[in-house]
Image (spheres, rainbow, N blue to C red):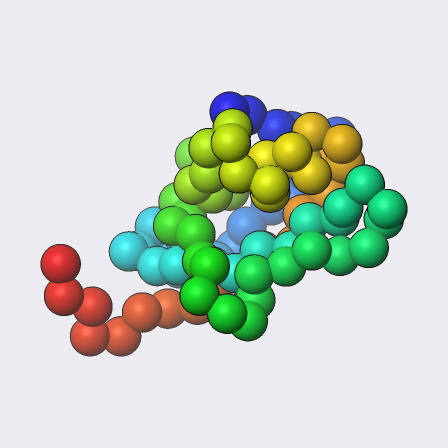
Length: 87
């Protein structure tokens, strides 16, 4: 599943390093009614990564987040660095 926006950003080296690590993020999208839907609090988080200056977030087509993104591609991603992660 891929969503894109005409808005573009250029990441600096510190953001690239955060996105390149084994880190997670909370996301917020807009629902059909225009109200924010988020997973910044609670137990839902996503894995993040990047390709060049494009951020990648894990999701599937069945998730409500994906349905919201089909309606409105605006998304806010709040990454955080995991310290002491054990796989």
